[in-house]
Length: 480
Length: 30
Image (cartoon, rainbow over all chains, first blue to last red; front, side, top):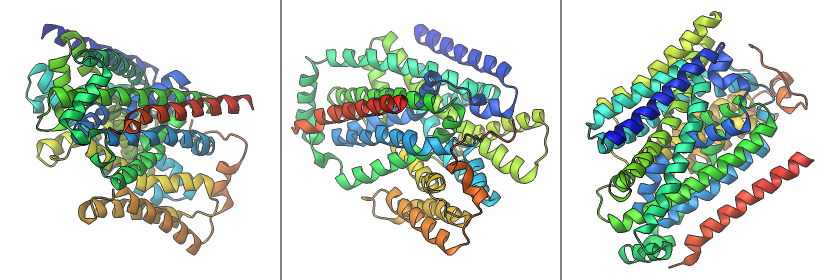
């Protein structure tokens, strides 16, 4: 217990230290939201990988593997493909003009404050839901590590996260993400051999899994239609979610972005594969858990030696924190930049803008907690909440973002129709549609169709709207 | 057990990552 406490307290102190130093280095909004646009490939790739890897991986994915078997693992294929698409197609055009937020891109490309406002509202709603899932995971971990009541754990996590994100902004988030990525890698790399040691090798583990759940290594374990549509959700969500694309702005240049993404895909796919193996282990050692979400905490507690188990739990915590801090940033920026400053209060001074930025973070950090404590967020496996978020973000933003830099004819009405159509259909399908088809598919189809049809029905955009993204010269940012 | 469902995932992922690395190298040299 003492050792666990020391490791966790040390870890949190380190995170606070990084937050504090970052605050000293943060002078402008550009520093606060996109780390001044100066990140190199190492930190850039780490923050991308750590943001991608959430409690969804360590609690959720392992839970799904535990529940439905290995075929779910094939969803992983789309992750490197999505990032490859992002680097090769989106990034070179998207980063021609540096903005602070994704909705700010929508405003510039579509010359529409409404488009920006709608984008910001989608981000706010989806993010708050998603943060809830992560905070719930935090409560689960703290319950197992320290025996504290999950609610207390959730409150403590929120306070810690807010403390460093609020003061240090993107710089703090990027550097803590780097630290958290290292912890995740070390925790998983050490745990997997120890897990395999409980069996006589990987082959034995696989055999035992088959004895217990014969369908684990069979395509029938998880419906293939659902697998394919889930993959689409992962693809769209990896390419165009706001917390990913702002990281393109945060990195120095295309060269850094390309290298960073190699790091990202190696780390993300590697971590996932290793975590899957832990999931298989949990299946055989603890075949009767009430929910798959408990698999990882139980492994850390009961299978691994106390020290390694604690590192593993620190890794889970890191996964969750590195994702939530990034989401707090995009949600905070949506609130303070895209809604408040853009629509209501345009001429604030620099220090006031930074203050508003921090107030925005504070609000979006407390909202999910209130919603959990009031009993609004319960039920589904964490991974499915995570994927629903990805689906809503993907269906809402993929088309206007990628379409905006590839298709000159796209109009603001088209973009607005596609965002509203995509998100609405995704949500409606989730509520009433056929559960075998993941809601992102109908959502995405509607978003693309309404984008194209409405764009053709409305007046073509002015050249000044699309030109910056189709020019060969790099532009500069407006409000340095 | 369908061996491909297990090992095929590792293999395919490895190939994609390798593909990316080669593409990156190629584009940097261009």
